[in-house]
Image 1 (cartoon, rainbow, N blue to C red):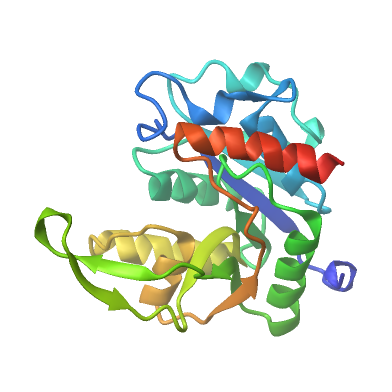
Image 2 (cartoon, rainbow, N blue to C red):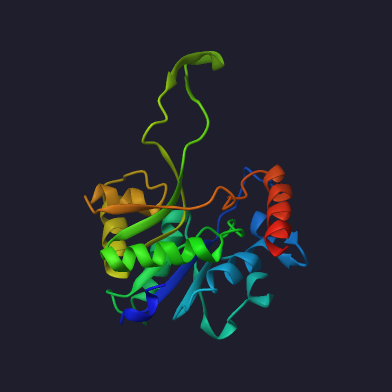
Amino acid sequence: MKQKQMHNKIWAIIPAAGSGSRFSKTELKQYQIIQDQTVLQHTVSRINQLNLEGYVLAIGEQDDFAQTLAFACQEKLHFCLGGQERVNSVLNALTYLSTIASEDDWVMVHDAARPCVDLASLESLVDAAIIQNTNAILATPVRDTLKKVAEHSVIDKTVSREALWQAQTPQMSKIGILKKAIEHALSLNMNITDEASALEFMNEKVLLVQGRADNIKITYPEDLVLAKLILESQKN
């Protein structure tokens, strides 16, 4: 891993203020329990396998639970207030980081509900971003046949999956570059679904680094069952 060769620090942002309505109307997916820890604690532990300068959890205004949890590398933990949407939480965290870090420091943004990311993938992402001095994200090639659907769930056509990748997190950039890209995109009311989409809108190069299929995002209740199996398998 080339991380030791760089002078700029690496920070992480984990936006954890979302309601997760597709998972449950009443329960937050990041606080579901797997192996006696919340999903969020697993996620934080995975990210902190890297030598981070610090990490920021962007949490909801009504969240009085996150700060009671025992997170990995507690001495590196920072909290900030999240926003209405994920992108707003990320921007709030970037604004917070701007007060304690250099705009040339690296930052990786990782979903709170991706507790299964492995160390090798994290190291590959960091090395690629640093060596090529560019924005980079983890992603996997699309495997399944894709269908474009018309009205009433009727198939319109099959879409070629060649050159199509499924974006994952972490997504890595420089603090100043990412903050500027998000602010610009939001000022023009662009739909920002991940950090890369904001960077793309600014014509910033974003490198794809192949990750693993088991770096799943918990979105629906059945994903929690799968995450439990993946974490158990990785432990063994």
